[in-house]
Length: 289
View 1 (cartoon, rainbow, N blue to C red):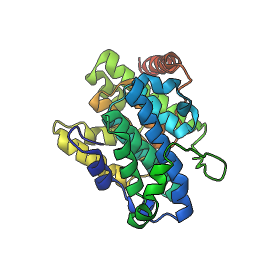
View 2 (view 1 turned 30 degrees about the vertical axis):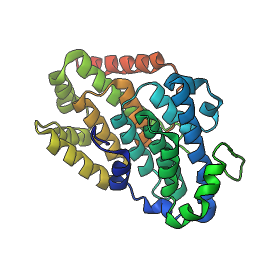
View 3 (view 1 turned 180 degrees about the horizontal axis):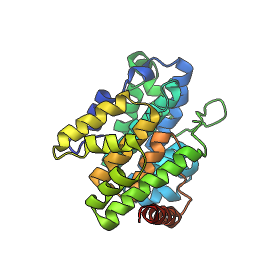
């Protein structure tokens, strides 16, 4: 997670293995150039007309991964939540350096747009991720052609996100319902449900480890366990952290999708998500009454 006082460049340098981008084949680096220019052009729109204007721009629909990050900006999600999502999505792409690179380019670009950084600085930083030799040989050409986008089949990097998964989907709505229980009935009721009624020993373990007064220790344990755990454990850890930190329910929904590696469908009305959460909350409470 990026902290309030972290500079974006330092955060990415300290959090991710940027060598995976630098060591990409030259053909993949040129494919990434279009996404770098896309970020720059979107930033120009925001600078000229404000953040809301980007959702009316043709740039909004060019690439669905960028659409995801821009949608998060438009919904005024915090940099901390967005950075957590970037970390979770990239964790799904250990076997694909080009998917990893695309998420980092578009995710860091979105954070820079949010911070109000100038377009030329964004281009310079993102190109620098491709390596010094590439930068020296191609910087001027890229800058001269910064308004030209070419997203044909050869240049596109089409990330394959997870589709419908019943196991994760059911668990996600259970966890969101537990968050709703905390909001409706408080922390003590949530702990009662988790430790006395809800049958998931891993959830109990992670919640008991993270629900401590020392928030720095809690965050340290979360980070350590996230690095070493399989996906289901990372899913439960993220949910526990959200509940402990009182993250907004819809933000928790986005974060859990990122851990799964699932694309968030922003066309689905929020009230449908919230209705399903409330239904599951009622079912859980009915089971223990």
